[in-house]
Image: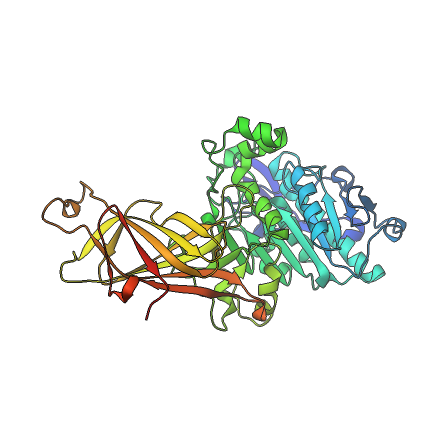
Length: 519
């Protein structure tokens, strides 16, 4: 073994060192594992007996009492309820976490409810404790243990790795990646807000990446972080565990722009209320890492939800909200994808056919509490330009949607403040609501002009026209059809003024109705 000393920020370490772990294989630390900013320190994992990685099986036959699977004693596997002919879901917790966490129990319960699968929970609590630097190193050994288990089940029990789906949160996501790189033909890895510190900006072999499985889908919910190197050495509850911003899968989902999640502001949901409602564990999680654990909650919600988490590939979240990336028509499957458990239904074939290029970002908007899924509506307002209209106006808009199945009232088209509208042009807005109203037959549209003292041209008293002139309104809803298992916008309504008038003249602080009776 050839050692080269490396001195980084006052800490002596080595590079090009290799350590082997019996039947599991070997790990090394080379120069490529270092980065002055992103990964300045590297250590080897704790001993196997300290981490004490365990694999606990749950099925519909034993949904609450787990069965420990030990490769060293395959009698534990033979007498268990493990069925290699069924799909296998592997759950991997993250930093300062254990299999006893509420989210592990809840996800396990929802998966068993959804289908008769093997649910394997990875217990590496002996290695997930502080310091964070040591925990990141331990994930490499846990990955070896997991890879050895899956390969053993393949060789001795006939398990097909293509039927294995690993679901890892935070450090657990990268653990799944380490396992996947040693399992030929692994079916899928879902990364739930993969940890940022020591992984962001590093080479693909250091972190989760698309080569680790046939499908790697990632949900980013806590990408707005400040890298504080010193705090990482001091058990940084507020820093370590923040999610990666950069894409690291075949498909990377960014709910609510992947940074700050609705409902995570303590002014919206006071901590005492969460403590009373959900208990001390959940309250502590909300206090420390609400955004970070939202990826878990979204995935759990997706398991048995009838609401489709349809996300859209777009250059930016702002463009997504402006409706620039709403179409899913045509043969290009890369325009839309379903986030959560059902991601494989719309993505697997597209990835195999080379239709999806890793690195793209898929955006979606969710709610602030359970159920998180929202129906997305693209509202397009076509503006007329009669001679009396101002070239542009600015203000606020609300809309109510009516259909045969229900009504959605007062959807805010301008939640971030007034918008500037150019007469004779069109503007689109993406809004969300829990209700699926189907095809819209009537729209009530509210307009209110806004004057901004910082923009003198917007001041309107007696010498300007604050009316809005609307030709028609179009409403499209995104849904998932069984046709080719692809998402498509097939629920679209065009609505016009009564009597087929050319346009509706809407005064400030008034409303107008539009109907689906366009000529």
